[in-house]
Image 1 (cartoon, rainbow, N blue to C red):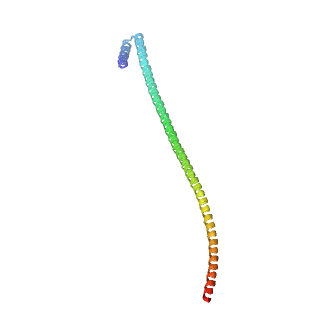
Image 2: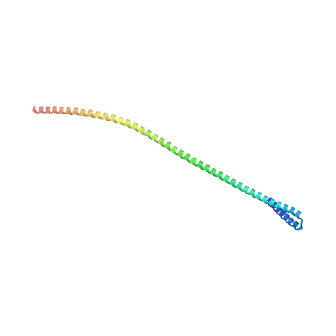
Image 3: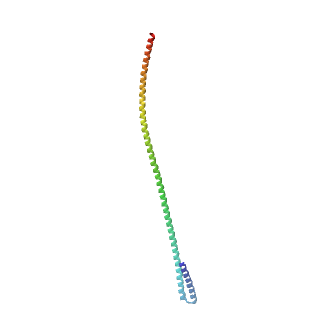
Length: 173
């Protein structure tokens, strides 16, 4: 607002100097007219330079604002990129931890199953030894029974022979 007010005052002064220059030229006061024209030119140049300076300042302000916006956008992009890397690394670690958990769990299950299988195998070996021992006893008893059966058979045959002889003897007598 202050700039606009000062610019309006300067523009009115420029107009006044130009009018004074023309009036003095028509009156033939060329030296005073020349002084007014020089003042008019200086003021006009001053306004032009001031306008250019303000335009340059405005362009610089727009450039600085654009540069800061670009810097902010770059910083936001870097921040987003870092967040994505962090998320990817977190996901990778989570997957690795789950995989490690599953590997350890699988190892523990196999170890437990191997221990159970080993225990069952030892039990089977004990049972096999017991069954073999019982089988050997049964075989030994079977052999003993066969021998006893053979002996009984022989005794029975001897007895039958003796009974037959005596029966014959009794029939004869």
